[in-house]
Length: 70
Image (cartoon, rainbow, N blue to C red; front, side, top):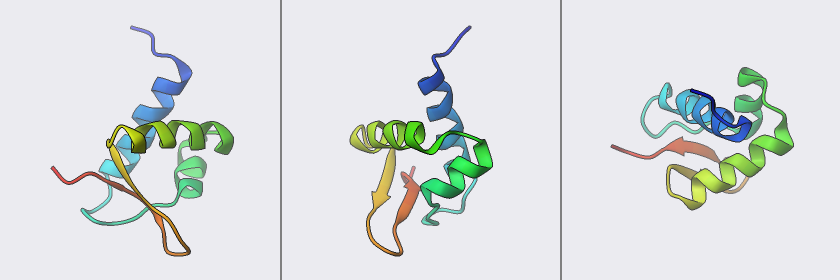
């Protein structure tokens, strides 16, 4: 089975967030560096994930991304 590049990046980003403790925030740059995903591409993927409510996004200096509680 083949995934599009954006689908692959989405799976990798969500998997990285799933490894974090519940409520822990992770920055997009951290995901980008850890998963070796180009930052501009990752921003687009994360926006779609947040819009679809698959991840939670927090703005501000202490913002970041978190997985949705199960």
